Length: 427
Length: 191
Image (cartoon, rainbow over all chains, first blue to last red; front, side):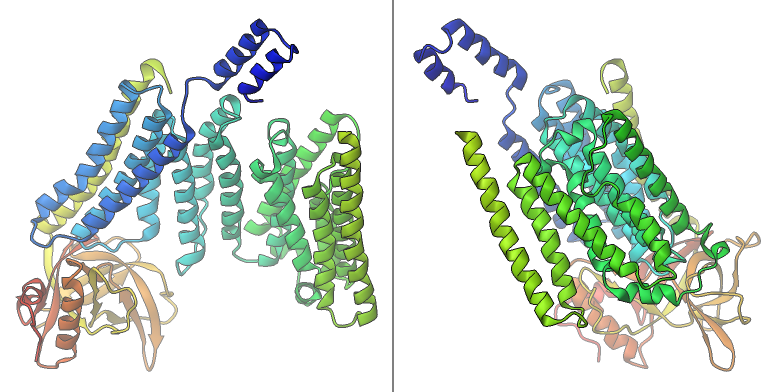
């Protein structure tokens, strides 16, 4: 409600002036001290640009300067960042703009200092060890400055570090340090969860954290890569279930990265696996249990499946009634399907049924919540499934054609029905 | 973080952010002042190297040593002990898994690959293959470097300070002249 609406209500005699004043005061108190969002955004971007610009200017590598002068210069941005942070802590402690902008600059200044040192001494070094030093020195900024931008830069940094170690450097190695580093970022996230649920920073974290974990989980794979499909499916299930927990579940879908990524990931992965190619490979694969039971992939898959299962049971007990949500049990069914897939060619049929089930449940969910987005997402899942089957040549053109027509009609009918119902409800 | 803890925490953070880079600098300065100087013969690099820019990419001759079959794998970390040949350039004296105790003249490096022809040979990836220069001069310098490296009569080498595993690349020389000076003169080419 906008405050100017109050005047209209007072004029119309719906509420009296005293009530209107109390309502206005309530919204002013709730909003806290005025923090213009645009100023915060520009403050942070300004700090990012100044930081990156400084990097470029210093990267010019002034040959005429002696080594000691260059070394001193390397510390100037760092010192400036620290002074700005100290100033915002002592003089501007209430200002989000000051806190976030100075922290952003300080985090970048640490990187500038470290990279200038390697430039001055001609050390190409490993990008991974450079990143590790950088993120570890940036970590305290998150907590001392209570800076969410620093936290997001940190998350981006540790994700980059894990990818560098686990995907991009040959020979690849495990990046287990990532999981410890991720844990170190969680107290700040928890603070956002407890105290600032309506802030944009909380929303950004709701996307950054699941995206980071999804990106890095693949680095676990070393020996039996196939098991990573189980690990990923359970991860998506876990994310989806986390997205349904009380505080996150109250967020809009676009603010709930867990729910969106969990659902998209589950459906995407299942669609990919609805082709027989992967399973053909799996069936020819020697799969004696002693070969895989203690591999990192199997351990990751087990931990994630158990975590998701635990959360599923907890949710159901808490709700006290069985209400089937579209994606929440897919990970469990997939574990069974995966092991059927090691021996039987029927597995693709099961996966098709599973995707179809998710699609139909999503459509039902959309209808129940009167939500066009969810309804059409469900219809899209079904169409994507049919689209995938379009590539399987053994299904006749007539059947495929009929399926397409049926889904097309389904889109019209479902949306029309819902629009009609919404209209009726509005009246 | 609020209240009494905030100021000590801030001070600790600042100390850490100064301590780590300062320690890196001190370690490298110690290598430069107290290390052994080696001259590494350099080889021309692929002129199509896409990463040229503000540094020149160096590659090295004499970065190989015969090894026994199966002892080393590609990508293994290794301690490389160095010695000097009759012409005064660095060559590898031995490789080991354990840190040498009888000498300071070794570097931490990686096995680039193990090749086998008639004998097995390990090739070392030295951790000093970049020489940073001013962005305008680096392409000129790289061209000079490559021409000189291909020219049989010119001798190009890198001056590297080595001390207990660490190495700092100090200079790149062409026939005894620092490449920085060659690149400074406009229009310099090497015949």
